[in-house]
Length: 290
Image 1 (spheres, rainbow, N blue to C red):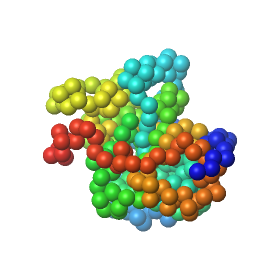
Image 2 (cartoon, rainbow, N blue to C red):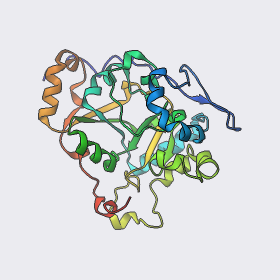
Image 3 (cartoon, rainbow, N blue to C red):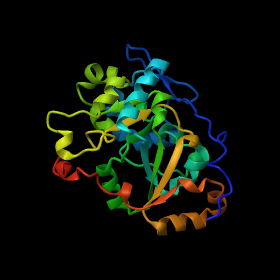
Image 4 (spheres, rainbow, N blue to C red):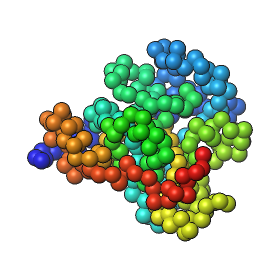
């Protein structure tokens, strides 16, 4: 494979902030640089979810990452040797992502030029659809496996620099965000603390039912495989580190269809194999759990 350039012109996809501004009284948030209203072409699709979305708690505004907070995140990252945030997506979305950045559902639906990007269900409440979702170190394989089983193996797993956590605000969910947002405890007991360094650190601790040492969970894996982290900023490709394909055939197929563009990227980002398409090492413990 001929390599002709570094990983894209970093000026290609400047990070676009879509952070909500919300009063603590629960007023409707206003989004910077992005209209908050649900795009017209998606309202009919969401009618059956409107009641739930109206009563879903709104996110707290993103908190600034001070030098002290960044240092605290960096300390945990270094101690646990965490390298990546992971994001899986359909293979057909790869070229738009590489060209435009990793965008939130809200950004995609509000821009007609992004109409060819395929989205997965279920969606978060519309006030949360301006977030980009990641897993830490390893995909949420329980969800990923179901999607692969239903749609085949035309997927890729993108790995992003973990140091994004020291640069922009994230919300740390010990379980899938959709499960927690609608819980009764969320507004008062969970939501105010989602962005804290302590909430990030807690993702890697033993729980009442899980002893990490007994399950031989590596230090860089969260305790629960369905841990999710969200950010209200679209992600620039300057933070992309690796792209994993299911096998060589899938990679070659995509490469032949996008040769000129693919050759403009850093050849070091390409990977093939089942590493991120398989369950985590502790899957037997979680197999019978909901």
